[in-house]
Length: 181
Length: 378
Image (cartoon, rainbow over all chains, first blue to last red; front, side):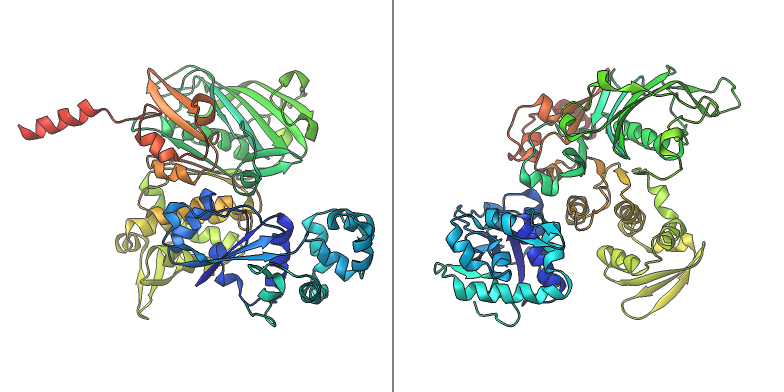
């Protein structure tokens, strides 16, 4: 069975691509519909629908983002491909930047700050003389190369620190070393 | 270089101010930015794909011929394919083209005239003008406000049949490829193989193309311009000439090799690709997949745009927007309507359903069908 990965934003796509590139996930690029994670929240986009129709077999959907409270709808024409019980949420709460904060050892400071992870990261995180600017380019530099192992560690540590709802999985669950669902 | 808008007058049977724009008119959603649009500069977007539909003999090919002419000028600074340009219509053609190049917006206007000598089939450029302004993200909504453009001094020492665009673009470079609906072009296999030699000498890609069209083929190797070895999946192989190869392969495979060579070149180099009748010879899935390649930024890394005509309006359901769909109509003159500008319906509604419900007045004439049937019944 192939996976369709729907990421809430470009930065989530970037994180998944980094993990794929360095072979840290329990699946490979060949296992993904259209050989890539999509930057989309729903299945309504015609390109995604078309890619699923080309495959035309049941898929597992992984929705990656922060809160993901919006209702996920399955277009009628995809009823033979997408099934409700094969849709999983993988979250980084409250925002993806929490991973950078963990990596910098600033988690406690962040909790005391009462700021959003995004604002806190922008204010406090500088790497290679570059301040965090919410861009995928920053993430690529920050977690690319040998630093990919930091990302893996941050995902694992995040899972220890945060408690999700029952239907919300952790990105760490997708790691090769930790692939329980 | 990216073309933003083409306005033509006196081009074949086209209506006056015949306009094709590559710049979005409607609002841009996050989804659109992901699949439907290229951001070529800060807040300056062009379409990844543009579709032209219409019934038979409504002017789809003429519309794409106009673009082929424009890309010819932008690639070679000459009109290379002069056949039929003034065949039915001997008026001087006027072109008004807006384009983006290296941080600047340009407006290029010219007249195209046949050479006065009857022995010479070249087309000459007359009354050429180029206007320019620097692009800033704040002006993304005023790119066609020409009052802010300044006229440039142009090189008048060029031959009459050479466009002064040479001054701006400097070197000959294929900036647009045209795949006509004519099958003959797909018989020149050696040209396709030579293209792969140009692109990283990547023959693996030929193998993957062949397998998309014919599962029995393992690979084809070019020995010279007229000798090929065909390898089959059952391990047999055969040495054939170009003509024999054409007879051996299905028409879909032959067209596939030719067209997908263009696709590879286009995506690798960021060259725009024009395809007349994209659905010819191909399974719908293959056509959908081809269109999706242009919407996929992990493949289309250099902002190539796919422009195609089709009778197969289901393909329009792959579009999330309305403004990158044009409809051709022929009533005394060929007219081009933009679905967003000329028809008022939500972009998420099925375009094919709208088409079949005759929302665009594109139904095939019922009486003409019945008249034909009546003749057969006699």
